Length: 103
Image (cartoon, rainbow, N blue to C red; front, side, top):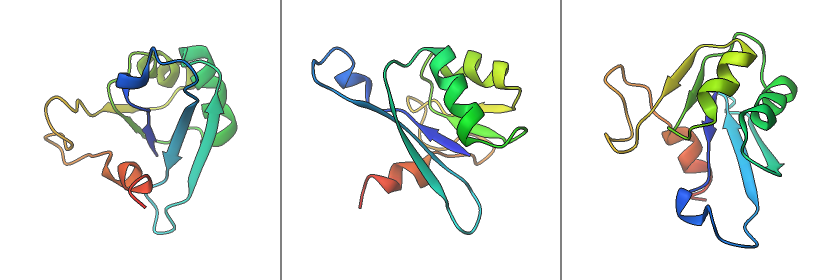
């Protein structure tokens, strides 16, 4: 499961609606989009509970709320630091979810 977070450039802009997106890495590439009121780890954890199967490997960008949310959900977590590129040394990437917004 890959989770995408909207750009931090928009963080302090008024009227911006945050959306949490996820895509599975199966052949079907099922996605979910959830409007979020805030990006606190507790909020993200609740979304994980409703949208992601327990034990799923979760791949995210480096937004600060993700590690605590994933840990409390009880899943493994891989963080892709976009400052270092869009793929980590093990080949994990967030490109699938990035591509959702390119269409």
